[in-house]
Amino acid sequence: FQVNDLKENDQYRFVSERAGNATQKYGVKSVSLLAVKG
Image (cartoon, rainbow, N blue to C red):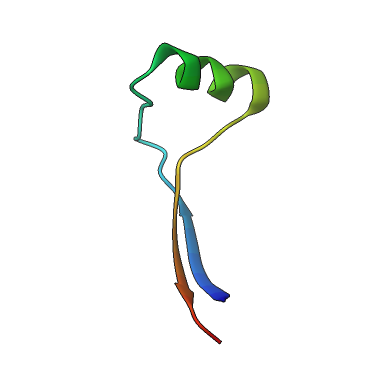
């Protein structure tokens, strides 16, 4: 696959407490990407 576009979802908030903690501890982020089969 070839990634054509990658965007961070800055406004997204993880629902679970565990995922929320991962954002603070490990810098986990929500992203959207567009990929095409090459």
